[in-house]
Length: 198
Image (cartoon, rainbow, N blue to C red):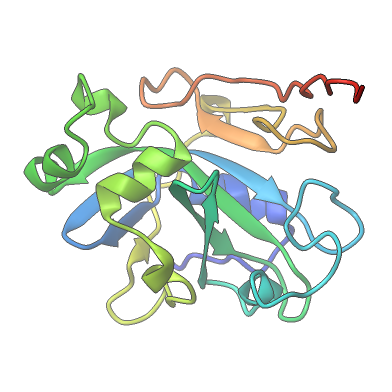
C-alpha cells in the first residue's frame, strides 16, 4: 500500500493514523494527529503569514518532516502534505511504541507507564530522539521511515478541535484512534490575562 499525502490536509491527517514512524532506533504507531492548512486560510498554521526560513519545508513537496522548537524546551514533528508550493502539514500528536521500547523508556525516564512514552507531541519527539537535525528529512524514501497501516474502519477514528491553538479554535482537525490509551488529553487554549500597566 502506498501512502498518498498529496490530498487535502484533513484527508492526509486521517491517512496518517495507524502509520508507523521510525527514527533513531524506535518505532511509533501514530494514534493522534492534527492538521494545519496553508497561507491565509488557517490562522493557527505556522505558514499563515507566508514562507519564512523556519517554515519553508511546509510548502512542499509532501512527505518531508517539519520540526519546530517550542516553549524554549520541546521539539514537535509534522509531516508535510498537499501539493508542492502550497503549505500544509500534520502535527504528530501521540503514538504507541511498537519497536525499540527499552530505548524509548531510557529516553523518557519520567514516564510512569509505557502508554505515556509518546502521549503528546513533545513526548513523541523525545521517545524518537527527534530534534532540529530531523528537519527536512524525507520520510517516504527507500526504506521509508513512515509506513502505511492496514486501513482502519472510519468508525474507529474520532475528530475534534485542535489543542492549544490561539486561532481557529473549533476547526475539527484533530483526529485520533477512538479509545486508544495513548491519545493525549484535550486542552483548549485559554488566553492569559494581561496585567494592566501602572
